[in-house]
Length: 260
Ligand code: ADP
Image (cartoon, rainbow, N blue to C red; front, side):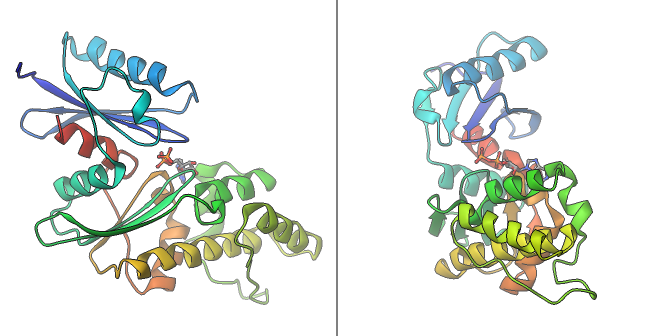
C-alpha cells in the first residue's frame, strides 16, 4: 500500500461539508468548509481538489464520514460519525470524557472510556427542535445572522430582569415556531424570545447527555457549538461545563483523516 504524505478526512454533513488535511504526524495542516448544498460526491471532489491545488500533491488517502458519506466515491473507506468525532476530539483534547455534537439537523451525545473508545452514545435526528435548524428558523424570523445570534442574546440564557420567564415547550420545530410567533404577538422582546429558544434546545440535548450518563470534561462540537448562549444554556441545564472544542465544526473530519 502506498503511504501518502497527506491524509484527508471528509465529513459530509446534512447542512455543511467539512474537510481536514492532516500530515502523517497527525498535525492539522488545513480545514475547509463547504455550505454550497451540492450533492456529496461533487462536494467531496471539490474539497479534495482544493487541498490538492493548494498543497501541490497528486494523491492522498481519503476517508469519509457523515450523512452523505456513502456517496463519496473517492473515499477509500467510510467510518461512522460517532467514531470519527470521538477520535477527532481525543486527538485535540486527550482529557475529553464526553462529547456533545450539535449540527444543522441532528444532535449527539457520546461518552468515552479512559482509552478514548466510545462507551455509549445517543442521537437525535428526528426532532429538529433540539438542533441547529431551530436556531436558524428562529434567527431568520428576527432577521439575525446565525453567527450574530449569541452576541445578540448574550452569555446569560436566563430570562431578562424586565420579563417574566417563559418557555417554549413544543418538541416539533413547526409548533415551536408557532410559540415564537405567539410570544412576538404578546410583545415579548426578540432577545427574550430568542433566549427561550436557546433554553428549549438545551433542555432537549440535556436528555441525550443524561441518556449516556455524560461526565466532564465535556467538549462541545459541531457548528452550533460556536454559539456561546447555547453553551451557557447547556451548562445551566446539565450542571456540566461544556468546553468549546478546538476546530469544533471539523472534529468529525479530523477524526476521519486519522482513519486513513
Ligand atoms: P452538519 O454536520 O449537520 O452539517 P455542522 O456541525 O456543520 O452540521 O453545523 C452546521 C450548523 O452550525 C448550521 O446549521 C448552523 O446552525 C450552525 N452554525 C454555523 N455557523 C455558526 C456560527 N458562526 N455560530 C453559531 N452557529 C453556527
